[in-house]
Image 1 (cartoon, helix red, strand yellow):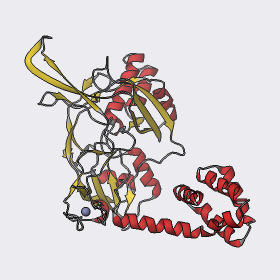
Image 2 (cartoon, protein in one colour):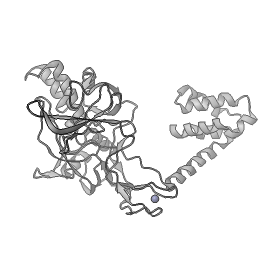
Image 3 (cartoon, rainbow, N blue to C red):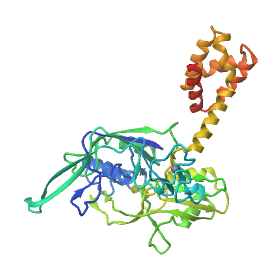
Image 4 (tube, rainbow, N blue to C red):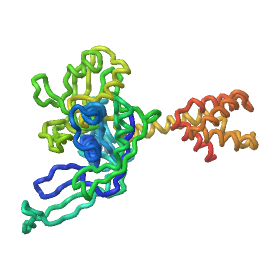
Length: 421
Ligand SMILES: [Zn+2]
């Protein structure tokens, strides 16, 4: 898995369909279909239409007809909330035990918050800081290039300078080098004056893994879509659910959807070689969520494979990506649980708190090593290990060994607390 980072050099209008109200809208993220179309456009502009039987043709097919999957690009800090999640319609209060429920994990959720009485409802769009969108209204131009009297239309654009991130999955790493060499690319509409964007591709080694299915405690799987999904039933008709035969094949055991939260949308797309729009077909929206029951436990390798592969049809066109579990807003219950957990962390390293008084000379370098370890400095980790083996007293040794077991997040918290005293 690799990360694609796209930075707009010019304002962009990202492929929304023209609406009846004379507003040409923009989406606030870059769908995988748009990413693929932009790269293919850059390839064609550089190499021309590939001739059958030539190496260029082979490269084009490898990049755009199966060898690479283009995920959606989102602004950092935004996410499609799964349709299974309900949240407070009105501002929650500090005493609300839960703010959000993910019904894919908890089963049913109440209709109203039992603590403050606010209705609980689905989030309809992207969550997070919305990008600044500019709206410009002008006179509509008719087919003969003459302004149509009295007809105004509005065009929305995303401002230049914004950054979007997402994933690329390539069967052959060489494909990513070729894609990286195609930048800058042009995304969205009005490509002569809009949509110029710089791209960077970062190898995912050591980065976050691809989103995969989540295991529930009862062994069932939760699958959330991060891009639209195109599914058909055995007769080839549009379906809201992944095909059980496909699930069974990928997961390696008989599997079926037992619960779903979905909504339909039209999925267009571009035939990249001809530059013509594809006929729209029915897809389910990003955020669609399924609970899957399987006959046997699914191997970790099969879950990884599902994340790399995606689900449904037209996967190499930007459909069928999986999404990670949502970042739910913590309610009082989660806040109290986390506060208790952090208190227990600090109890475990309590002997370190006495050191500034008992060993005033040794404390500053030790605190420096603790802070550097929390920042991921391996030399500091080795230094702490040596001190833990020959500590000034047994309590300090035990506390340091505990600290070295903390996750990076917890180590950073504990280091901050120790530095504050
Ligand atoms: Zn409430």
